[in-house]
Image: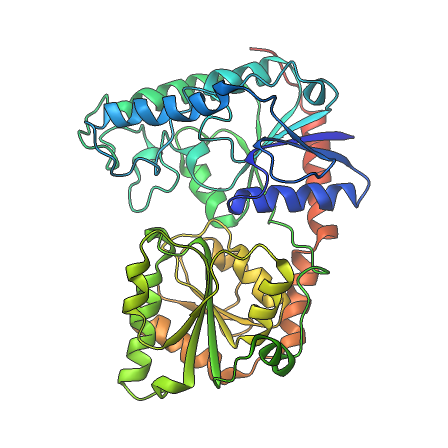
Length: 420
């Protein structure tokens, strides 16, 4: 079986990391997998970049320009929506022609347009599409937040400056609806929460939806003795809390909730300020966020060295995911694999990973008080680190995830696909 994994980037963003890890897992378990990306960032032989062309940049800019104009020249929410009006035709590439399965992942920001996706479907090849955010099930948004208009027909979009019944979101919704109604695509959600959202979507409620979690190379995320990890990193604060994201000040990551929770723990006397240190890694746009941290902190910047990330998790008592929504929660399984206890808000994809007060703490969604209680609990619970790692080995290591995807591929091959 030959699988072509299609994603905008090779390494940047959670979807890219998940897609790349899946490619490795499949190749290590008897499936020939390649990855096709617009942004190739390594010399990996199994990763193929789109042919170089000025059009690649233009496709990205053209989509943003159309959104910018439709939004009344406002930059607000410019990257919270995608309309897939520009992209690259991949159907003539040799990697596409030789594939038995075409596996789409995150294909936005000028990678594939809706017309390009239509050409892929016209080829007659079985198509599997893994949803890493909500864009495949909504019209234009990547996360719907509290909006539920995707359950009927998008329009009156809260991400647009001038929402109306027939706004940009409604027009794209109709295009997606026309596309989906003529095809058979096997959709995969990375969590049960996301699958339930898809089943409620007017676009996907009649589609086949499987649930397969993201894979983790447990051999790469190794568990180091906590004292040894702290010695290497030169950290000696009694309690270490770690927080990481591709962009830590992205509002959906909820860093202010974590900072308020830490402030609450200190102000009410649960912990002395000097006894807690916050370790932060990831990109940042507005560095003023650091002035609001109520405890000592160390900022490591963007870290792409897995060994360094593993040391940060191994050294820490608690990893906090204060995201408003997570379709899965990769930092949680990474941290668990290193013996670090997770605390996260409930109400989205983290609920698949964390069993409350068994291998982590699920706080009431957006409750600062309960998030603080979760951190307090995790810092004092002393969960067995090996048990946390064994949970990841059982559910998220390469072998079980590769096996589940092989089953999905076989089902897709068995389905009767027809050309548009």
